[in-house]
Image: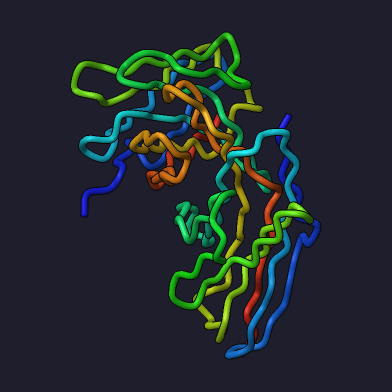
Length: 118
Length: 115
């Protein structure tokens, strides 16, 4: 069964610095997708970035980048130039390949609470 | 751009009552998911629908049921509510592709409080 592990319950970072949020995963499938979501205190779930298991390059979206190390089964999120508005819970999630669209659900890790300090 | 719309945003019910949560997915998205997120927890998958047919089932109690209608909106029906059902309930939608790169787009959630 697939599993996502986020070992950092909480992280602090100074404004304008970079921070790395760890995520490791376990799956027996060869084809899968990895996602990061941000959940501010207001509660909504915001999609940040996606990495496919066959993608050779690390995904980037603005200040977000994903450090994908397939052999280590890790998909760490890097946030550059942290801003106060980045303070939130961050969830790593995985979807295994499912032909025919029968199962496309995401499985989430337990999350990392990031606090950006001025 | 249109987002996933959930209603109501907040709901307060008493034990043993029933509740109905509604979800309107992003237009042309063919899959709807329901998740439950308890306080300080990660979202737990409940159930999903693909083209109005139930496609997967997770840890959804027998007291809960869901369906997707012809206009693609979905409803989660919860009966005999218990204190432990108090949580944030998310609906999400996605467009199924041959690869698994389509993200789930979440609504703002319905915060259910059972007293």
